[in-house]
Image 1: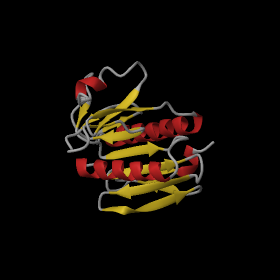
Image 2 (image 1 turned 180 degrees about the vertical axis):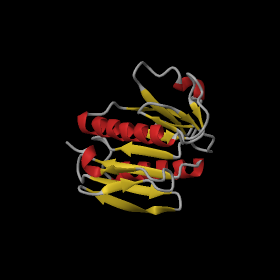
Image 3 (image 1 turned 180 degrees about the horizontal axis):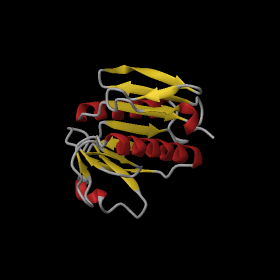
Image 4 (image 1 turned 90 degrees about the vertical axis):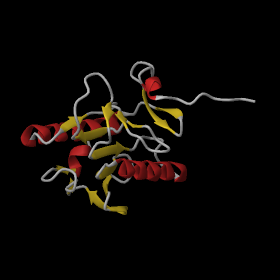
Length: 183
């Protein structure tokens, strides 16, 4: 009989240097590094969120590779590409609870039927954990931002080049030009 030990939060602290992982269904799910366009887009989102943080003092803007600990039946953590958090800072530890806003920027492997199912499942988990808005950012193929909200999780608002994407239910007054995510 082959038994596999369940991964625990402490395993997230031991992911190899510069690694990124989430705890899903009792397993440590490693996430690959990303390329130029998705990495740049997540950085641009973080910078815009940081400006919002400084302007409103309504929480904390966080860049890629920050861990959020949640307590869902099938998921114990998130590590979005950019996020905004209203909870208490935890020093060097992962944050407790979900961010109010999370941005997931698609990488090369985030396309196709299996990827769509996985992303839909993750969005469902975000909303179950308390996230109000999730952005699905596609800078590689369609050049759009799909804005999913907890109050209408199946029907995203889609923003294209020349438009301003928003996250009003999570971040009142914050908008970002889709063009800023592209080169």
